[in-house]
Amino acid sequence: MSTANPISVPPAPQPKSTNSALNPATSTDQSFGKDAFMKLLVEQLRNQSPDNASDPNAFMNQMTQFSILEQLQNQSKVQAQQSAAGLLGHTVSYQDDDGKAVDGTVDAVDYTGGNPTLTIAGKDGIDPAKVFNVR
Image (cartoon, rainbow, N blue to C red; front, side, top):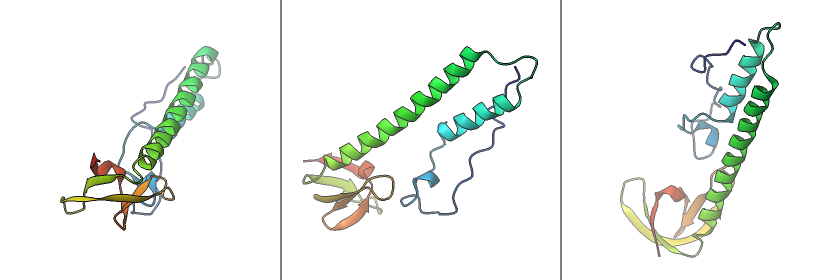
């Protein structure tokens, strides 16, 4: 079976939006995600020799890996949402855009942008990853 070079698989086209907070697909994370995995799988199938078909067990292993990858990504998203919700009502310290430490109480959690954001002391759109202390 002919295999595709994973380095030659082009990256998935990104949306035109430049605001990564509103569109998680524009994040700078370059990890090997489910889109890249699926492109690699399709490329392998496209380049497979008709007289030398791939091993069906290998194909099933790849599909299982794809399924596991997708479930792990979903689980990671749920954990991020639960972690953000767990901050509600707590006093936290976070780093603002200027790099200064700011204290405040978490008033709300917003899930509309794909990734949760916090409202702390009336200021919204704060990334939970910027929180460094919870009281």
